[in-house]
Amino acid sequence: MRHRLKDVAERAGVSVKTVSNVVNGYVHVRPDTRARVEQAIAELNYRPNLSARHLRKGRTGVIALAVPELDIPYFAELARHVVTVAADYGWTVLIDQTGGRREQERVVASGITDHLIDGLIFSPLALTAEDLTGLDGAPMVLLGERVDHGPADRVVIDNVAAAREITSHLIQLGHRRIAAIGSQRTDEGASARLRLAGYAEALRAAGLDFDETLVAPAAAWHRADGAAAMRGLLTSGVRPDAVFCFNDTLALGALRALHEAGLRVPDDVAVVGFDDIEDGRFSIPTLTTVAPDKERIARLAVELLANRLDGDRAAPARELSAPYRLELRESTRRAAADQPGGNRPPAASAAPAG
Image (cartoon, rainbow, N blue to C red):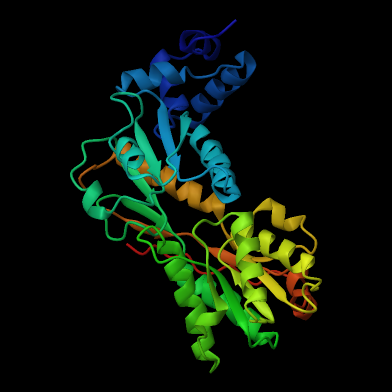
């Protein structure tokens, strides 16, 4: 039997309005009254009717998360966190995959279907800030680096700093011929450009030359692309002593190619990645990587969306930065041994950027 607010009110000896105030977190309720209501809620196992609440606000209770590829484990893991955080708001999450295609991203950014969703969390690859300006869709929060200074709130991490730190980590271990796998020259390759910039900054800071022959492009960031890029570096005569892969799936492919070539990781070549996907914790060797705080990214995005839905939709767009850390594992084995008391440096600062 599903109990109603009226049932809770009768059990607690208060009005329906008082029960509603307690359920909705209204602060001006006497402590003893609140305690009686909460006891009645527990005894009756009362659950708010979220659908009715959304309807009263003229909403569906559904938000959307749109990402380029669910085959990339980073996005799948991020989606799990978004679903978990959204549940705290009573929201259901509709997940869409755009493939980074311009027309599909336009459909998503325009609200998918009229009145289907209340808001959108969106990681675009093809659309620009100009494309998104003036769209008459649901409130939107952007993820990632593609749209800078755009018309919507955005959650990012500092890709340049993270790439610089992971490259510096390799330099501190004594590596001098550090390859980079994953560069992209297309408009969609914003993350690649930032990570390449951080890599180059670390080299310059250490007095090392930026060698184009050590930079391997990858049109996509899948395992096969990482393996192909690593094989290309080896067969070209370039012999790196370390490799920075721009995401973990590229790194997993590189590990396979190095194994096929009879090279040991990290004894012959150290390998690092970016994203801290679960697969990297079970690879042989386990993968040193940059670990963005995916739970924090999801929480910031959902909170920004909730603020837009309940607050001023015309307020200036905000940009928030989520933290990251380096996870030092077996693929840079010496580093783990060098870390006193563990293998995790402190998390990077995450102060709001706007």
